Image (tube, rainbow, N blue to C red; front, side, top):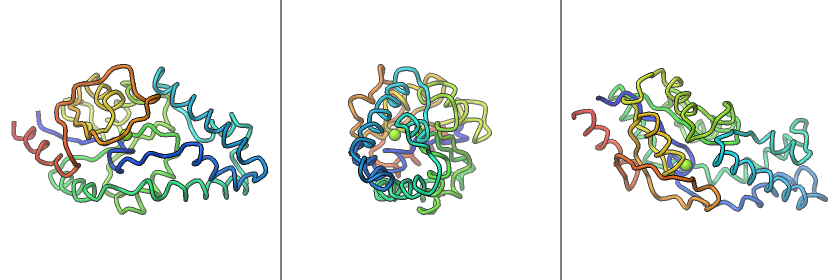
Length: 237
Ligand SMILES: [Mg+2]
C-alpha cells in the first residue's frame, strides 16, 4: 500500500522537545494579568492544566486555554487578558521553533504527491499554532491540521486520528503514516486505527502524561530527515 499522507504530531516531533516549567509558563501570564495575585493565579492555572492533561490521558477529553482560565476565575477576554496572552506567547516562542529537518522533509514529501498533515494534542487555539508555523515558514507546507482544542477528543482516541485523516482528505488509514514522539498518544493511537506509526523517541515525556499502554512502532527514526527513506521504502514495497 503506497503512502498518500504523512501526519505529524507537533510538540516533541515537529519541534524538538524542551522541558517546560509549567507553573512558570502561567506566571508569565498572571504577572501581566494581575501582578498582586500572580503566584496564586499561576498556581490555580497549573492545577487546572494538570487536571486537563489527566483527563486527556485517562478519558481522551480535550480542553482549551480558555477553559483553564475560566476554571481559575479569569475571564479570557479584554485588553488585560490580551496583554497577558502576549506575554504567555512570548514565554513559549523560543520553545516552539520548527526542527530544521522539517521544512525540507515536508517539501520532499509534497514533491512526491504525499500530503502533509498535523494532529496535535493541544490546549492552544488554531491561531496560535498557525502563527508559530507562519513564523517558521511551514504553514504553507501543511495540507491539513487538527488541533484537539477544536474537537472533543485527544489522541489516542480514534476520532482524533479520523479527524486528521479528514483534514488531509483521505479515508484509508493504510495509506497514512503517523509520526510522533509518544508511544501511547501517537504510536498506539495511530496503530489502533490502522495507520503505520513512526516513533521519534527523543522527548522526556512527563511521568504524569505517560499513557497506559505503548504501541509497537513500524519504524523508529533518529531524526526527522530519516523519515523520507522509510516512506520511500514503504512506497516501493
Ligand atoms: Mg508530541
